[in-house]
Length: 389
Ligand SMILES: *[C@@H]1O[C@H](CO)[C@@H](O)[C@H](O)[C@H]1NC(C)=O
Ligand SMILES: *[C@@H]1O[C@H](CO)[C@@H](O)[C@H](O)[C@H]1NC(C)=O
Ligand SMILES: *[C@@H]1O[C@H](CO)[C@@H](O)[C@H](O)[C@H]1NC(C)=O
Ligand SMILES: [Zn+2]
Image (cartoon, rainbow, N blue to C red; front, top):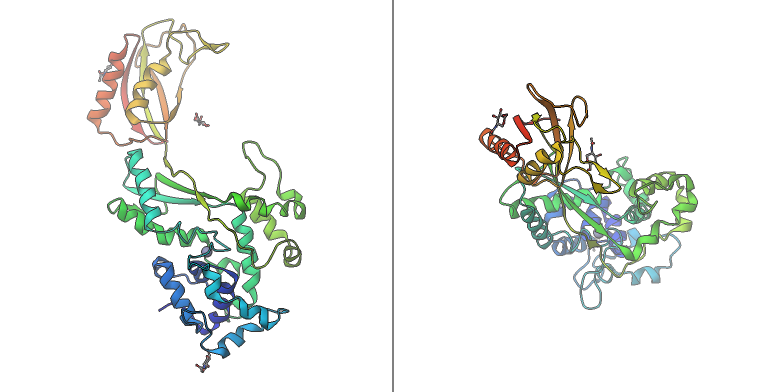
């Protein structure tokens, strides 16, 4: 049973006719319980068809239901509507599911056990220390445009549900994706908790080159929204698109973009899974026993001037043990090559970027310190420990 009411029927009918997938139909019916999203989409589709009174063959069982919704599609002759049969909408002539006009496949074939196994594989390959995991999803900006178009398509019917529902009540693609995937990924990784806050983030990203230019019309409707920024490949970022969609009137939007959205021939393309562990900070004190050792590497015209630096002597072993991608090093006091730092030593701290290992016992930290001490006679480290930011 789907948690739908009679008032959802015209919405379901319209969305299926427009070429929405089963999960997108649930989203636009504002179904906010997670379980229905986890059902196989093909089963949900069957249930949705049965709900609006259609059999597998797509014949309308209860003609009064179909008539109910027909007056919503204003301006279209009944003959044209009759051809937009939901069963045709959701599958091609071979019975393959068509790419959803709203999520562009993200909630179809890209949201299931197979995809979860790929994500889990990428996580295992990284060989990270973690006990919880945050799943983040990055979607192509043009999906917002399709979402908006679809919202305008069913706006009246959604409002007619009786409650004061708005676009914000529509479940986001991201949410529906996570609701479906989190449990599957957790299972693949032997029951790790997938949570909303974690120092370990697993990023899934989708692109859809076929429709990349879909949001370009917004550039003329809201030039202010699309200012070029450094280190961004395109001005059509998701945030800018969302902002432009908030500003554009329904009438202008409908003039410039099809409603409902047009079909796409290809599904979104999943990008490489990105794993990122929050920085870990290590601190300690060092003494150097060599006057000519600089604190940071000296580069002149790209050439290394000194053989080694304090920073490198400490950082290299730490970096390799934490299997981090990079580091930031800072120490207090003067940065003068010729000043020997004696006494208790000069305090330093190091930020380790994306460390694959992050849990160390006191004994292991002592061992690391010893490795540094033994690596050269120019430097000694003490009080080496993991600290917070
Ligand atoms: C068709 O559906 C409507 C409401 O959905 C219902 O009132 C009516 O009794 C149904 N008619 C038949 C023949 O099933
Ligand atoms: C640390 O290093 C990274 C890359 O090397 C850099 O992007 C970041 O701004 C640095 N952070 C600080 C606080 O210096
Ligand atoms: C490293 O050298 C410092 C300074 O001599 C010393 O205090 C510290 O105990 C040494 N640590 C290890 C683990 O060797
Ligand atoms: Zn969809």
